[in-house]
Image 1: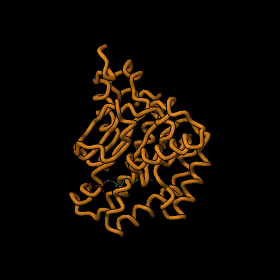
Image 2: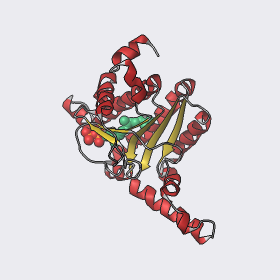
Image 3: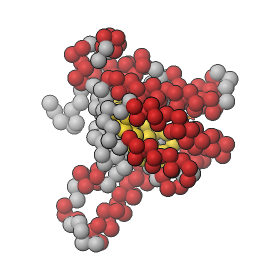
Image 4: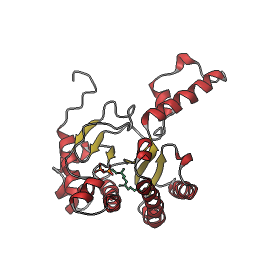
Length: 248
Ligand code: FPP
């Protein structure tokens, strides 16, 4: 780790209490654009750039996993032009950034119901997951057409089917069983959730996985969420007293 990086952090000893897994609700792209008199899509373009920088910073710091909420099951209710723009942006970014992400050792994974996304986007997603599957510098989960309740319904159906086939004893179902049937089975639960642009809600994001996650909300719009802002979130996290419901 470089001297410059160390100097941006609270202090050297606190490095060991960095979160292993950070999740982000990237809100405020539209408001950022509006405040600057720009079209909403410009906010999404800038937001994508911020996401790229955030991922790189996680890698530099040694944060193992970043999970980003890029498109929810509810986002289909936006104007058709905006939805089409976002789908095209995801695809374009994957084509453009895959090589660099692979070189930087990023393992990319998409979570959500991908089956109803445009075919060409699905192909790029599958390709990028296949190419990067053995990378280990940083795990990057991107939630697209993701909804936590839908994820849980899907898990319940899959578990019930196993029971119906006689392959699973209902008595043995525990919290780990449920976790293993979610899209995020391969990742530990997030330690820190960051939500930009001030809203105090979870918006159907990782409801099961966030049970004991520390939540940090900032008024900053996502496109302005830079390394300094991330450091602030990390400092706030480091001051939290994580008790997991126990008296310690
Ligand atoms: C929320 O802002 C942002 C989104 C719904 C889209 C986020 C997508 C990106 C940042 C691009 C990511 C790219 C990849 C490849 C994953 P908003 O539109 O809800 O803003 P508002 O609340 O101010 O209207």
